[in-house]
Every structure is written in structure tokens, then in C-alpha cells.
Image (cartoon, rainbow, N blue to C red; front, side, top):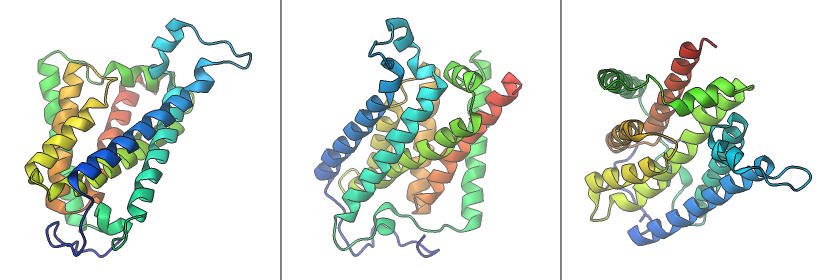
Length: 250
């Protein structure tokens, strides 16, 4: 990582990719992410004899833990590498500078993790008052059916946050922050886009994702480093894994 005291977002000596170019390249990255995820489905929808799986099997594919692991690892790692390649081709700025990968102060990390925990607890209380399940059905189905929990945890706690934070609070945030969107517009837009990709959840869970996205964006802006929201995102996913493991008794 770079130095422990990160520069402010408005005092950089290099220019980020323009707002529209960032949007265009971001679209390319997301298409590549979807393509890689689609490629990962091939072993699950076509067997060795070339037969295509039934419609019923395809409907339950997103809750198949082996598919979740394969799809997440392939698409997340591939998408992250593409982001790094795009930035590497831009002269005059390092990957660490562009993505704001600076070592934060320990007290700052603990502060934001504390805020994250408090938010998760508050959302849990709201869910309880609204008679919502403690964890989404998707988590129960995937975790409960998994035969390789460590690999599933690796995909959900490490790989998924790595790509999503590098893309939304890293690449897109940097390209849009110094435009007319400013901090507020950038946080809101990246949160909306991040929320949209969580298609496996119901309405209440999507609302929680939106709230957490706003929190991650604020943390990225105020801490001035991608490391903080990355830790927060991984922390939230780890808490979800621990919670579903406790509920299922595994």
C-alpha cells in the first residue's frame, strides 16, 4: 500500500478519466463481468454429453453453492484484473493513486467497522419489527447446501467485495468525483448501480443493500481510501456468513 496519510481527493497531480469515458469503460467492465459470469454457468447447464439442463434446474442455478463460488471467483477476479489493466494503461498515475489504495490509520478502520456493525444491528432490528427473516433466503439456501464452506466464504467475503469496491467505490468513484456530480452525486449514483446488481434479494434486502452502499460511499469519501470500504464490505459479508451458520447450526 501507499503512505499512511493519503492525499485529499481534490489535490491530486493527475487527471482522472473523464466522467463519460469512465461511464463507457465502466460499462465495458460490467459487460466483461457478466460475460465471465455467463461462461462460468456452462459446466452447470451443459453436461458432458452436450445435454442442456432442464428449465427447473436453470431457475435454481443462482442458489447452487458450487455455481455461486465458480461464478463469483471467475467474474470478480476477471473484472478486477480488467479494471487494473485499464488504469495501468493511463500514464502519469499509479494503480494505488487512482484507486486510492492508501494505508488508513488503525483507529479510522476500527471507527468505520464500528459504524458498520451499528448499522447492521439497526437494520436487523428494523427487519425484526417488520417480521423479515434474520438472513435472506438466498443466504440460507446457498450456505446450507454448500459442501465446501471455506471456498464459499472466500468467494463471498474476499472476491466479491474486492471487485465491487474496486469498481464502484474505486474506478467509478474516482472518475466521477471531480465532475459536476461531486461527492453526493457520486455516492448516490454508485450506490444505485451497486444496489441494482443484487438481483438475488427481495425488496427489503435490496433496501438494506442501498443503505449499506450509502455508508460505504461516505466512508470512501471521508477516509479518502478504498481500503476502508473494502474492509467494511468484507466485514458485512463475514457477519452474514456467521449469522447464517449460527441459524443453521453448522
